[in-house]
Length: 367
Image (spheres, rainbow, N blue to C red):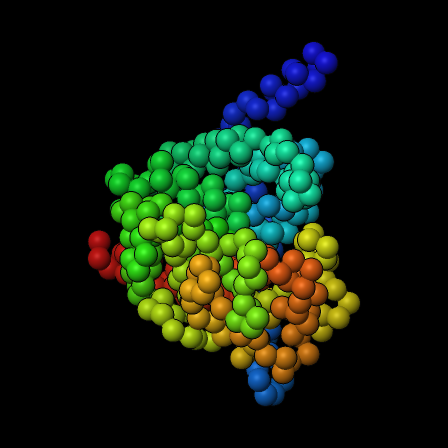
């Protein structure tokens, strides 16, 4: 018993983010973010064509990324060893951004999928949420001290990662001098609350929602459900418990509002039984990890029945539909309350990369 207590105390000690091993991605390394980001364009008509990879020397900004709940460790909080889940998710969500920014992704002792499933089954929450947050905060402060050197930065999260970044922004960035270097905070898969009908206030006091291309110092947030049938009554995301506040929604493809085609980078990971699968499935017919599928999806931010969400309309006109965003792939048949959650970033990643490029250009022009 004493050994177990000692081990638990040791596991809660702060990480030393000056050490390379505590980072999933850092610039100039052969790591998860250095994997192949080649894309095959699948047009509405004609043959697929391999796209040229964006110039990797356009690194005028930094991207600091916190990955979502992906660890399959058996403990309530994960260890600091990068497994397939952490590496694969960074390769899927963050690596494509390296054409527009240097990539930084800390390992952190997140609340695991094991703990999440137990809680979904009615078990008590035995995980340490503050431990996960302290890791992210410590990594952020290390990045600022050793790597930033006055450069503009983008914060990118998803789900648990977005929750932790939202807290980090509120405590370490919002209203402080470092806010002037913020290009955007990309926080899908969690609720960023704003006063009803407003774009600023609520969770983030002085950081507004992004409403125009080239706008900097702003936040993007969305929760994704199919337009038809829409979120069910027990939808998890896009809600507020405060009648004066609502969950913000920004459509990365059209920040000013309205429907627009979504430029997604579809590919790994695929999902099976709520677990990310990073091996290429047998029915994936393309030679590249990512596919840009013309006309596959469109989206619009809407608010219905107390839920603010990115309503996605999908077409089934391509053979890649089922393996890219089909219900069996993303799991919204089995878990309709989660909706498109697992592909929140993938379905708009092309739009996000262009947005970061325009923000970096606008920030440097202004300064």
